[in-house]
Image (cartoon, rainbow, N blue to C red):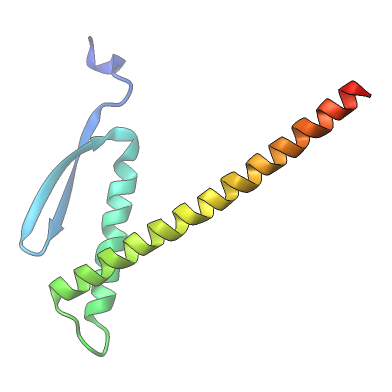
Length: 103
């Protein structure tokens, strides 16, 4: 199979945490999410380090990771509620259409 026929080739994304770097191989269509996520994460780490308490690198990364997990959980819950509301609307629409057809 030729490379240009591969629907989702991988690209490399470099991420540096503390004194270590990681070269990740990610799907090309998700590259921007890794890059933007990394930039956001590091900006948030910097904000935690610059607070009055002056968190160290590990503390700031830990707090940022927890914030990211909470945000994901919150968004997942919102998505579940939206999916449920959408399904309710589809059910009502199906009922309305069925009633209209039968009358």
